[in-house]
Each structure stands twice: as structure tokens, then as C-alpha cells.
Length: 240
Image (cartoon, rainbow, N blue to C red; front, side):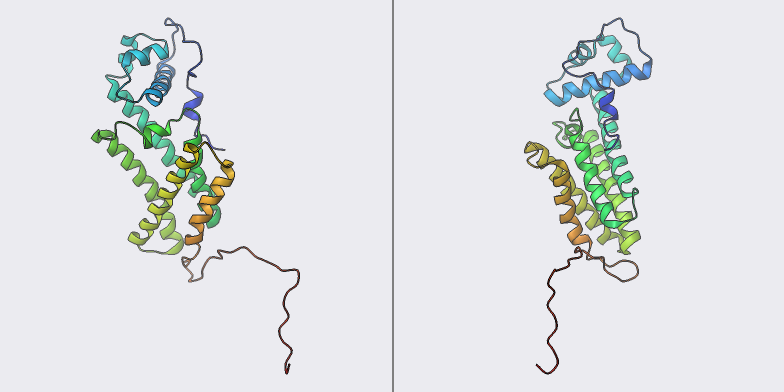
């Protein structure tokens, strides 16, 4: 649905043969390979239980080669974290800019979180479930990514509804929060319903509140679908 899996297409799957150590790759390709290997190990073992030697082994390179690209484990983790946070922010912005229909915009923003969290490789765990959130540089990057997503939604709300920055930002934080938590719960519960249905449930919840905000022209959005009945009730006749 999106290109959030760009990192995963560069990954070396966990069950794939380890590449030969003497294989030569361009620097950018080697760096991508090392980051994919690091993601696999960090996701499965966590930051603290992971060693650079294990990452090098997963990537099929020597430790000196790994250190040529990343001075240390934290540097490697932060580069990997930056790439995933940037992916999420990009997806949210693209979703908000994908349509001018506000109901579809909400749906697309919610779907961006589900697509990001449901992507192969489980890189989202580095963003939302890291065992290194006590490290200031990690927490700051995660917080900055969340703020950037809230900023994008805030701008859309202010432009459309004309709310002041504080109220628009509060609404944006709610949309971001329910999308993230809802998507993580859905995945953690082993996808109890199809993803499309889960997205519809969460986006309907959000739209139920957003729909009652006044538009710039003072009109309210129609939050309810058109309903027609096969046997409408006729008004009482005069004089009856």
C-alpha cells in the first residue's frame, strides 16, 4: 500500500545464508546491508543484549568492516532509529497530502500507522518499544518524530477548521495517539480482524469527533452517512 518497506527490501532475511565475507559491495549498499542486519538483531534481542560481533556475523562481514561504517553500537542504533522515524513522518505527511477530502484524509493518516507497524522486519519496535528509551538521544529522536507527526496533523486541522494552534494541536495529538496505540494493539493481538477493517474502526472513531468541528465557512461536516428508508413515514394529514 505504501513504500514503507523500502528498508525491508534492502534487508538480509534472518533465515537467508550469511553472505561471503569477501563479497565487495558499494559503500551505500554495504551500509544498507549492515543496517538491515542490525535491525534484525536489535529487534530480536534488544539493544543491551546485542553485540557488534553478532551484527557483523549476521551481515557476513568482519568487525573492522562494521566499524568502518559505524563507530559504535549506539551510533548504529541511532542511524537505524533515524531512518525509521523519518519513514513514519514521511508516511503521515504523504497521507495528509493525498486527498482534500477530510474523511479520507483521516482514514489515510490512520492507515499510515498501520502500514508502518505492519511492515516486514518489525522496525517499528525500535521506535515504540525500544529498551533504550532511557538514553536521552534515543528518547529525543522518538519524541521529535512524534512531534513532527503532530505538527503535520495540526497544520491540516488549522487550515481546514480554523482552530487556534492549541486546540488544533490537542486534536492532532489525539489522532496520532489513537492511531499508534490502536495499530500496535492490533498487531500485538495477532491481527484479530483484517487490517482494512481495523483501520476503518479506528478512523471511524477519530472521524466521529473530527466531523463535528466547524469548517472555515461555519458549516459542519456531515458525520453520518445518507440513510434512506424503503417506507418513509408520511406526515399527518391536516385536520386529522
